[in-house]
Length: 476
Image (cartoon, rainbow, N blue to C red):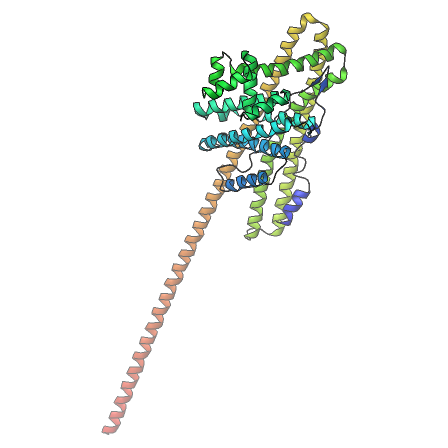
């Protein structure tokens, strides 16, 4: 690597991409206590797609994953790896949708579903293990639930059959994440002995509860009639999506209950924790957008730096010229990064002010029950407005970025055409010069040949004159 490139990096141009410190937010206590521990919503982990299936090296990436699983014997670690790989398949699918490479999405979703199935089985094994820490179990079930969030752009590509399978498996994983931890261990063991997986066990138990049938009757229907859970649910007049909705509503009720009790009791610590959880999610959303812009800045700067290095290596510019160009590039990158950071700080400040205002509004709403509904509408409107503003900012940023890329592409093409023209001109001049040299050489050769012929003729004439003189002398 060129020493200037190293100095550019070490100078801090690319440092501090995660402006708010993701780990700090991730480690905050996001639980509030009323009469029981309430599980709060957490942000789905941001997993970058990395190598995608349109790359030649994707095969090696898959081999690496298989090797990691092969040498992992701990159920907890294996669960974490499988959940990570499932998230990576979703990120890769999203990237393929963005790149309009839909031909890869079907196989990626198939891989995701297979990995998700393995993950929920391993997570369930951990959850029913009484020797494993409760916090580890909570973390894994939360990650499993997060792994069921699929990009709508990806779902739009799937055919009806695969979309139906995806929906079913997502519901199954969601139910496993939220129900398996509350299941009776002995009941689970009995159903496992029947040859059922954890996903099937959860469905059997939830169908039994919703229909009034026993678990044995549900298993019998499944075995004797070889019907799927969807068909059995339909026969029992149970809507599978209603079960999922029931779980979601239960979580929402617990969070609302916790918040209401915190307001009633004046538990400021609980109120702040619940508010902080939402603030953390919003901050991480802002951070994600900033990191994407930073990635563009890094890519653009690296390309320009590479171009300078190539010109230096080709002898097109001197070391001194290269150093000046790199110094200029460094200043520009630092300025853009400073602007990016300033923008992020402004958005965070704005977010904190809004969260503070919303907290005050919540307290006022509790004091005045008659205005409760009106205040809720205001809050929803404020959130919607912020989302619209954020969406507008995102569109404007994307538009600016696209226009900038177009201008750079046009400028690059113009320079390339100019270089081609200059090269062509130089070739023509060189060709013309070579032709002139050739003609000049031919003229010189012709002149030399004429001179030689003339000299030969003169020599011949001299010889003839000499012979005539000798003859005359002999005659005399």
